[in-house]
Image 1 (cartoon, helix red, strand yellow):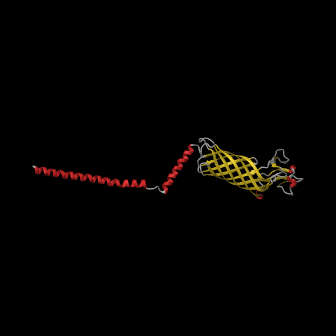
Image 2 (cartoon, rainbow, N blue to C red):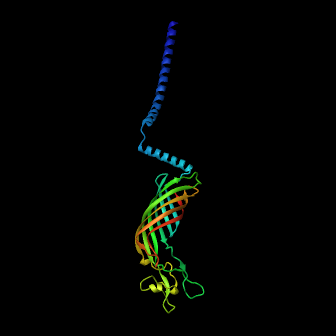
Image 3 (cartoon, rainbow, N blue to C red):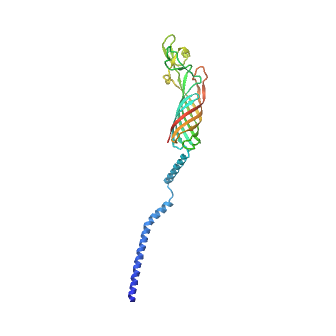
Length: 295
């Protein structure tokens, strides 16, 4: 009987030993499976961020900042294209402007402007063409040259009052300057030859001064047809300071009014009118209407 009990205990010990061995193998197998994943996770956590990851995080943070600023009413963009018309106290001009945002407060501006100066004594008159109905262009008596300006400009736009919301008004200070290419074009009129009905087109010269300044012989102005191949270049410089009020309903649209002061100086006096004082330095005020888009 004791021998049977001993055999039973021996068999039970063997079974328990096999069971324990199987259980240990199972634990070891599970540990081997999870160890690589755990090591990879630990390595990922301790590995320093690469330059690419840092750039991605910085870009994400910048985008989040821009979104937050837009929600607060700030004008946020990469670049803008603006067209405008300026009415000056001494003429007019049209312009095209490109802006590149430096930061939320400052934008670098590059523009090209084409304008014309008008003398304060200019007055358009009707010619004497001996007809019941007036036919032809009016003319400006005593005008010697038309004066145009081509002005490449660099400046900055600085935000001084942001929009309280997307539909508000942003106020910017503008300061800019550059060179001014003055273009002096001879002014032509059509006059009647003495004692005949024949006409000829003339500009002011010593030989034609009498006919040019005789109102009774002037038939009409020639408009823009003459004088382009006789233009003279007069170099100069210019600068301006202004306030811009941007009423754009959305940040991607430019709809603004600009009010400012402009100064131009040239290398010599510009003779626009005969028998009147002319200038070398021009100071004028202006108001501009601007429209365009931002990206």
